[in-house]
Image 1 (cartoon, rainbow, N blue to C red):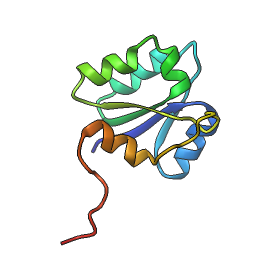
Image 2 (cartoon, helix red, strand yellow):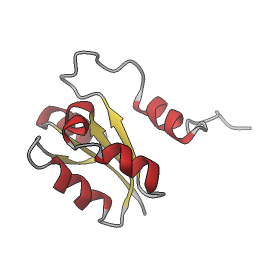
Image 3 (cartoon, rainbow, N blue to C red):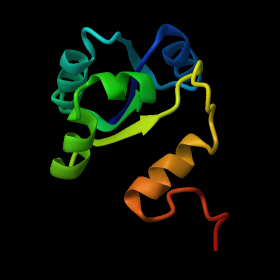
Image 4 (cartoon, rainbow, N blue to C red):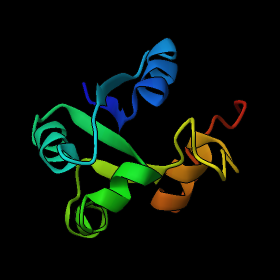
Length: 107
């Protein structure tokens, strides 16, 4: 079964862990290694990376998003992001996939 992972600061990772999402607390100096490790683990279906760390990964998030079929790698705002969450995490995933993944409410 594929999992969702989040890579970010301690507060963002803790917030996602409350929702059952596995996470890796990372920093600017180790985000590239953490991203490669999580994406290469084999069980990752979606990897969420905070904007701050994605910007420090030297374009790796964009490269993975364009070149890899799995996992889906997305940039999200972190808990301390000045812009905040302009939309839900599901909205970021829907936008990346180009399809709605939210429940339709049944037939």
